Amino acid sequence: MNHIIEIQSLSKKYGHLTALDDLNLSIETGAVVGFIGPNGAGKTTTIRVLTTLLQPSSGEARVKGYSVVSEPRKVRSLIGYMPDFFGVYEEMKVWEYLDFFAACYDIPDRSRNGLIDDLLTLVDLRHKKDVYVDSLSRGMQQRLCLARTLAHDPEVLILDEPASGLDPRARIEIRELLRELKNMGKTIFFSSHILSEVADICTSIAVLEAGKLVAYGNMDEMKRKFTPYRLIQVRVIDQLNKLYESLVGVPQVANLKQAPEVDIPSETLQFEFSGNDHQLSRLLNELVEANHPIISFNEVTRDLEDVFLQVTKGIVS
Amino acid sequence: MSEIITTPTGQARRSVRQMRNPVMIRELRSHMRGRRAFSVLTVYLVLMSSFILLVYLAYSTAVSNPFGPSSRQAGKAVFAAVLAAQLFLVIFIGPAFTAAAITGEKERRTYDLLRTTLLSARSLVSGKLFSALSYVLLLILVSIPFQSIAFLLGGIAPIEIILSQILIILSALTFALIGLFFSITMRSTIAASVITFGTAIFLTIGTPVLVGLVASLFGTFFFGVSSPPWPFEGLLIYLGLALAATNLPATLIVSDFFLVEQDALFFYTELIDGHSVLLFSPWILFLALYTLLAILLYWASVRQVRKVARR
Image (cartoon, rainbow over all chains, first blue to last red; front, side):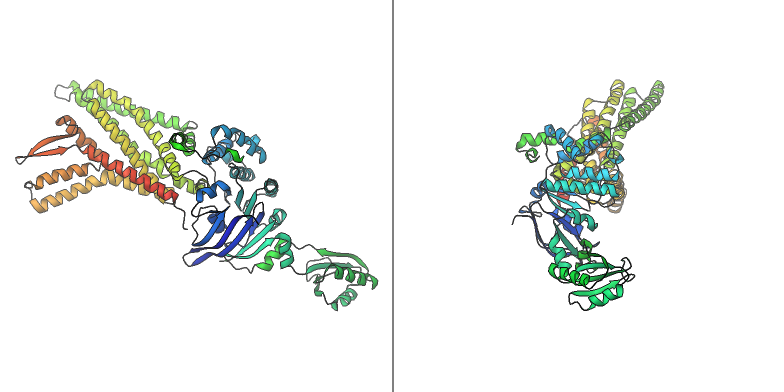
């Protein structure tokens, strides 16, 4: 398997505080990895080490085989970094901002004009080319920042909370942009605390807590692994107690609940089902044959939040 | 887009890149944008002209008096006034620009962005340094024509102007590097500015005061009110010249004394207690010291920028 980012036994200590503790993580080329974890888990520390900004206490991190410690220049040519805060230069126009950073990436003068137009078109800011950067909205600034990370056509994008502080529309725009970059074949590694967004575009997630990687893998695998049962809701007309009695004895059924114990409509029962598809189908058949007046029988979709809650313990390093 | 990334090689390409330093271009664009730069330059020239005019009027009035100063002295006064203004620029304005150069990036949170690009530490340091210096040098250059008034009045030799401008420009570089170094090592502009101005004031005013105090205490303690015996007197003169060479105003004054009074650009021989002593003009040592200090500060600044954070 072709891994573009490899982190091995990475640790970072600040005095007695351990920010990263023996972190091991390998990211495939073209993957979109959501890096999630509570505040203080070590996400930004990992990102700062990967972007050559911070010296690790021990361990190794490599981007496309280049060490972030001994070959930082090679690593910088491969990554595009977007911090969690957009630093603004005063009295600088949008095109000047991109031109400046393109020059910092050694892109020759003759190529820069076309490149700036392409980048602004990609992030839908071409009409703002001659506007001062500090007059842009937060969402536009974030899109401009993303355009900046693409100036040297990096293979890997490392984004620290790309959607933080944005309004819903701007978040959607950033999400769509990330999706487009994913289609362009970029490897994207980004931290976020907005789990629904991570779930929407990620191929894999890595969960960090107290400096340790507590879970990492493909989204679907993670959901299966960390939510081993299905959550089923059944709604009937009037005869909730009769339905309850029928379900109590079923071996795969556990944790039967009804409103107001859980936030579900009245005349509805919710339970955890540990069986497979066949067993679930058989259960539904049996209930129908037993003349339960069922008006709905559905599986509640489990999301990333369930996985997150399952794998983290609420510890902050 | 990948084909547009190039890695320049060879001395010629490096030179071209240095001239097209993106940090320098960005800073210059920012400094010169709008009316601010033009206004500062105009105000500076108006103040300078008024100051020179006042000095000229005061002296020309005095010159009309048969017992007053000569026009040569008026020329010297104008020359000194222009130099004083240039000293102020070099010691306070240049470092004020550079002290905020890197801390400004840290405060705007753009420093990390720069450090993850392919911009080298040397390009960052030299870009910041020369963009700050260029404005100060512009102010110095526009004040040189005022020296022509000194020529009109007489009393000033071209070598005096050339020497003083060389010393001023080297000092501008060194003082700007002091500001830049502290800007790199400190977290905030306020802290960097305080320590930069503290150092500049110490180097300009502090050292002569300290030397004066030590000399008077030392002299009184060892030799009382009489002058010290040979070879102590010779040693003290050398020490005094060496100390003068650490200080820009002292170097300018003493070097001018060598030029005007002794007609010596480099050295002259003085008879002390019957011994002939070769005395060197302090500007030679000053050039060596400040060049060395500038090189050291530049090297330390580049090293500091290159260093990966541990915290």
